[in-house]
Image (cartoon, rainbow, N blue to C red; front, side, top):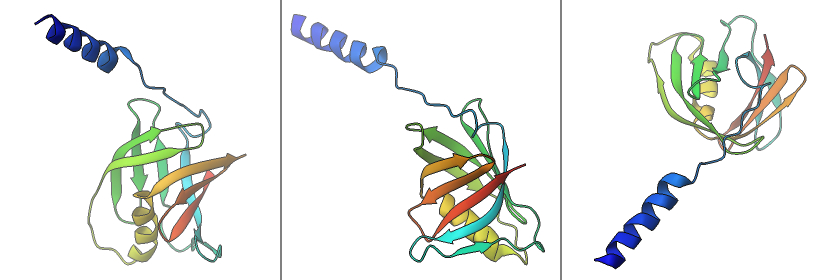
Length: 141
């Protein structure tokens, strides 16, 4: 019985006593980042977002690690976790599914968010790196 109590105490102490590191990048948070171009992950070819489509953007809230995304026709909401100063993971991304004429650009945007692993901010530009087809380039508004 004594061994069980000691084991329980150790598990509770380790499980609840250790706080995970929380990284926050002030430049990333509370900024509306407009999608400006995509970069093919295999060829590095960059293609600018056409001016003819509605603005697509991403917004990382500093409260509760909430993420909001707006495409040409649809929107998403999810969570993000900063694993280090430049490492990020997007989870629980839920999007509306309205059909629209600019769905190809929205598809590039949304599909690559599910495989984000890193970001880099230089001035008012941000690049989000993806393990999928395209890296996403943004400009702060």
